[in-house]
Length: 206
Image (cartoon, rainbow, N blue to C red; front, side, top):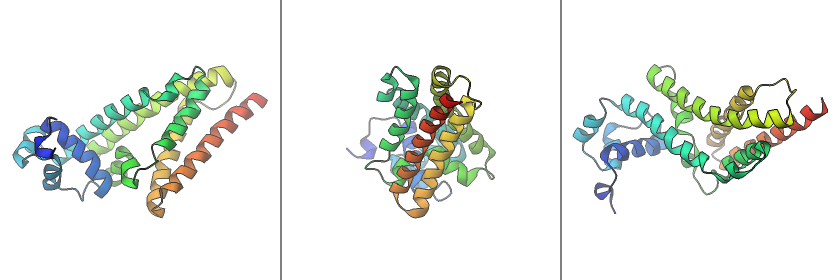
């Protein structure tokens, strides 16, 4: 089935095209014409749904957050009873997302775009921040439960560790792009798991 015959609404096809092309080419290098071609819609249809490329980008951050949140909520690590097992499972799930995918395919849409537009588009920066913090908040909930069970006296906060996980993962993607090697990202996420395991282990020794 070609794109023009896609059963998806034009708006959803444009959002999907944005997620793909921005991760492959960057925001500024992705034109409205390219987005329309990838989505199989006319430029008139584009501007019917979005007044500008910037607004499409803002809406795409919400679309990305909705789609990825559903994937994380249904992931197998959520089935573990122990929240620490869930946390370790979350990290392993992030590793699994690297397998068999190109750099663009496993890169975070939000992280990719905010690095490019943080200074020139406050609207995009804020939208990316909301998406990143939404995901970090879901990880924070798991960490808070794990801390309450396994390290209640530890001085670090669940929020700080949740944000650290996102900083490491986003940084891993940047390094993977710099080295042109997805294995770099995998190695960094392995270190993140080791750090979390040691953090809880040492908390029990305090």
